[in-house]
Length: 308
Image (cartoon, rainbow, N blue to C red; front, side):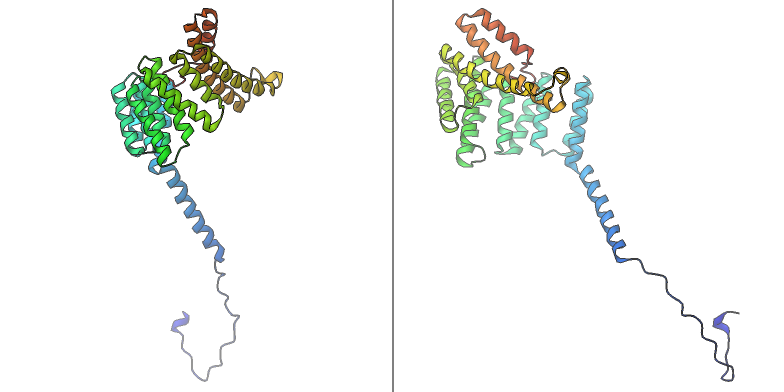
């Protein structure tokens, strides 16, 4: 019978004592903490990978991969999906503008640039990148307006160094002059900007290049060659020092980090050689001009890809 249905009388002897039943051990308190940490980690990882910004980055990376495979339709589709995930991302819109520019879809590229500028407000990186893209597109009036805005931001908001903004404005004028879209007055203003930038920051090689490039259009061709010689020497010396550290067997098969830096240096040099080629061409130095032009091409000069 069950214990609950049994009866006892006072005359019955008391039941014999039995060992005390020990309750099952409780779960150690730290186990609950571990479970909570695990759950929070899963939630965090899930959010990290599947939040709108991360999804947009993933979609854009897939779009870049499609572009590299020349699947442009798929790239555009993925770019639109990226925008749907993160429509207020100014940097993403500039990337998409770049994609349209490379496909010679300038209207769509300009639309994305304008959206990026509106979203980025006075972000110096957005203004700089948008201005450079407009210059490459040949839309120099817009580019030069943005470069003026950049100087204004430097003076009032101080979110970019003034010497950087002055160099950017001077270089935007030089790029316009290269397309015969800058007036002599604008070129003179550009010269003032770059001289002031050098006064503030010193003889930075990229600033010396800007000055040399502007001198080409200002008519100071010998001065241009002198500046461009100095800028080229600086970056060639940097590259020589980099390659000198390699073992003989690494020269043809560079470590990835070294290869990356070397490629960036060659891209910079390609632009500088193209500037000096133009100066030599205007001086009538045909041999030197061709030599520099060939070097620029071999190092990757490409306006569409932004090596310009």
